[in-house]
Image (tube, rainbow, N blue to C red; front, side):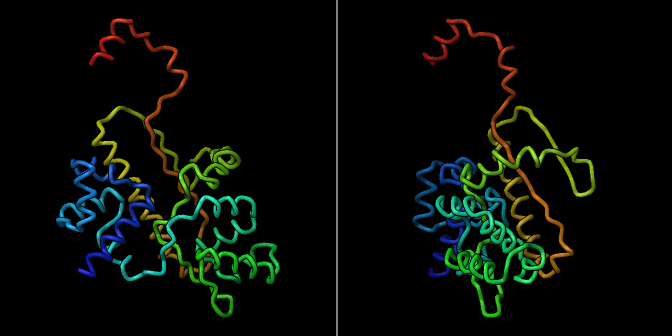
Length: 256
């Protein structure tokens, strides 16, 4: 029973880190939200349902099982105030991004104009935030989970959208290591749910690659930014071509 409790708590943490609600799980499983809440409260899952929940979160069950053995890697998201601190202190955000990509103290000191004492101070701040564990000899142990993500529409994402998005898209995306796909269409809610699950899985695979390649020297790794996005949307200029609904149609819809 103790192991089941740990497994369910790990699953709840992973769902929260990915912004997945009980309502979202219920829709994916074709169940009521109340039934899903009861299932989590009683910790009663069939293997098929557990598998489908992991699929919805974009992860394998084996990955969830590995989480149980890493109780100290618990940070999957910073608080709003912590993200705001990163935005207000670019050097702190720089060092955080470097540690997230498994750079060593020596890598950062060699690549950036940071004095050793200043770098130690920044790392100590990340240690206090439980983002890393700063060990003797300035060795760095990353404590964030592979599911780590910035807050949706939080300070970091707003900074990207306001200041960096234009620079990011200032490319033809036709060179090696680049890709831009644009697709739109109308599909069923079930297909949307399946698509979002696959995008989450892609993001999880990217995080796994980042961890797997951590053993390579920083000079052998390429910085890459992965941007995944999906939302119900159509270009605003199309709206002027829509037919205006007749008053009778509006009345009928309201009555329905």
